[in-house]
Image (cartoon, rainbow, N blue to C red; front, top):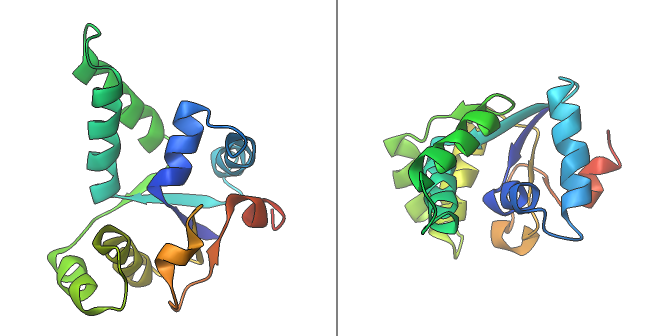
Length: 140
């Protein structure tokens, strides 16, 4: 099964955000065991780097620490390229959040089985199932 993780889910794991991180840890464990294939988009990688670097601001080697997080993430998750076509197609789909629209277009192109997010309402009606982490955990 191919799953695309939304940025908020990845940040739940990285920042240990309660109560969500417990389900996300189970998802990452399934991905690490290779019973699930986990994906992230290249745009999300840039966003996560930015947010991580900002979190480490004022600390020595903030950029190096943020890049270390990216290396750890990509040792488990595969990166889906974000194409210009994804960005252009995202403009015209019915979605109030352009970043989520780009993620949707990447997911459709990559033929993932579902998107895992904490913000299902941001994804509206799309041709891919959208699950909360707690819902997905019940399937694995």
